[in-house]
Structure formats: C-alpha cells, structure tokens
Image 1 (cartoon, one colour):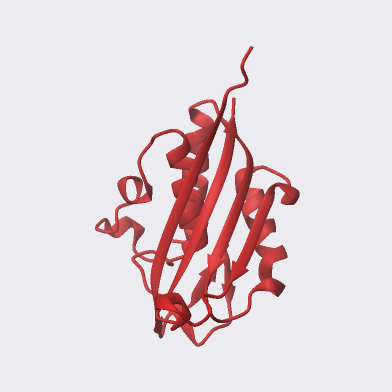
Image 2 (tube, helix red, strand yellow):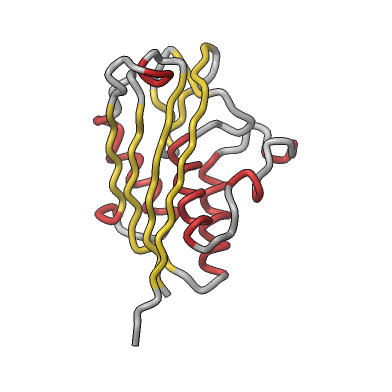
Length: 160
C-alpha cells in the first residue's frame, strides 16, 4: 500500500520598519527594526502556515486569516500556526517535519534558533529534531540585503 504523504511549500515577506518588534519563530528577537504587518508579522510562522495549508490544497494564510479582519490585528502568530495545525489534524494528517529558511541581513539569529525550534515543535506536536531553521543574508542585495524587508521559506511533509 502506498504511504499517504504530501509536501507543502510556504513563502512570506514583510517590510522592516522602526517602531515594531521583530518576531521570528514565535520569539521576539532584539532588533532596531521590526516587521510590519497586520498581525505580529512573524514571517517564519506565516511561511510554515502556508506550507501546511498548501500541502492539503487549502489555500494560503490570507484566505484563513485575512489582513482585513480586525480579529487578527496584532495577533500572536503562534495562534495562527496552532489554528492551521488544528485544521491539518482535523483533516486526518500529521506533520512529519518542517524545513525553513530565513533571509535577512541583520540581526544574526543563530543564537535564537533553539528557542524557535522549541516553540514550533510544541505547536506542531513534533520533536525539535523535526524542525530545521536556517538563516542566510542576502549579501547586501535586494530588499532583504538592504534591510528593507525580511523573507522566509518553508517546506513541510505531512503524512496520514
């Protein structure tokens, strides 16, 4: 019998501005610039949500948590990830793993990766070994390299 597996890809981007906190992977990162968005603008968790939703052809984060809906204004993206995860489980699927990449020039986040993995693994009910988070600069090119924005990519494996 063929195993039931699905793979999803997620991508998100947010502008960086002064006067906002920088939330990545469910934790606040000290930074002069923060991500601008309707929610807490956690680009990493948003990319993971899109990967999970995409694996089951359920649309994207904007369909489920519209930035025009005031109930999501300033919302903690861990809540959005949990609601997305609950939808996946409701459909009969489990998360096998997630693999993520953050693209930002600054700040350096290597020291924060263990805390991010802990947050994400708890929400998705997987071990920390099943959460991969990598970061790279944009070599000072483009909006991420010029510190005008931040982006994240995520891939997930679901199984039933």
